[in-house]
Image (cartoon, protein in one colour):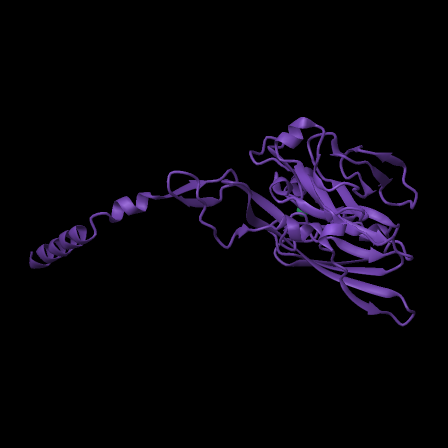
Length: 336
Ligand SMILES: [Cu+2]
């Protein structure tokens, strides 16, 4: 009896000491995302509490970042480029404020790293699958059948495979996971850009990579968001700075699923376009290209006049859902 009274007294004292503890708790809200992930937020509006599972992605860094690999020379003089690529599929990314999506990543980003080689290099990819599904790396380009990343699924939780081939042909190519259901593995983010430079190189330029992608965040096989380099409207809010009379070279790849086509319109200018980047002679001089799935190429242009210029999908639905950006052209004479 004495023990019961003592416990009751202690509990009562605790309640009066912390009368708002239960109210304080209600300020933190927890809900389940579409993929079953537990999201905790504070306040009445969505105010995400980031966890170790939440990825951050910097489209400015991605834009001009090229991964040339670990470079060494073989006895016969061939350049060997080695890359280590790790796949994961358990991370979340805040695609748009308050909208979280389960991204599947190569080396922790969507798109994966831009892999850059020169024609004739020996490319060696050490692929590690730390995901919960089987994954592969399928590179477009020329290589042996067993290096195609299609019939050799790499098992979950530590499976490994080494891909090797001679870089070619010259151009800009996609790479992506090729495990079925393919749509699921691609749309979650397992893709990236693979560039093969000509041995003689290309003329000096301010170079950048643009991957046109989309996100089906409610899993109804229609995209809810569109973007250039993953974050909708990013380059509209953070214009890409370039200079007048400077050659700009953009490696562009369309990875949008579900919609049959995408396109790219540049304002106040036209560009020379090299489909797939395989020829040194442009096929057209235009301000508008149309791209189906994994179609890609190289755009080259320079601006005469300083100012702000839009680039965007001329499919207006795409641009209104995020696929739009700005070039901020500075006068080279005045900035130098
Ligand atoms: Cu996969």
